[in-house]
Length: 213
Image (cartoon, one colour):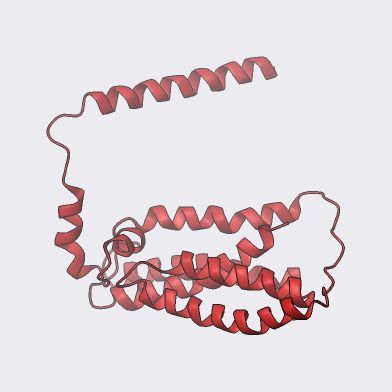
């Protein structure tokens, strides 16, 4: 049965692959100028940076699915049977502790800065989350604990799905306001994108930290 199932999967993937190749080869007409299309609609996107406009507005549905995969990954990893590592212990290294005392607050400020400039320059939730995750790792190496004691793995779950929940909530809100799912009203697009990215920053930072060995 496994051999038959394997062959069916291979055959199905082959058919789909050949169909995609045929579709690409037989595309009629010139390729659309996507850069021109983005720049023409940038004024209604709520942001002035084309990358942010594409990721969080023009193709926000794709980004929503990507975020869902990233946030489900630590939940799946936590469910896998594995030997729990010993709790981290502080290194008692004064140099590392002094570095953490300076670097962690600066990392927090940098993360906020990266989040806020995402509307006009390179930055946004993913950059800010990476900085926060690095700060959590440094804090854990220096002190043996990076999160408050009351924030147990079970209580981390709501924070982990916060970004995805806000993403979906903003999408439904835009639908109720007369548009379509994730079709933000131009007047509120900037605020909605900022709300989404704020939630994603916290959730993605926690997800990255939990995926680290």
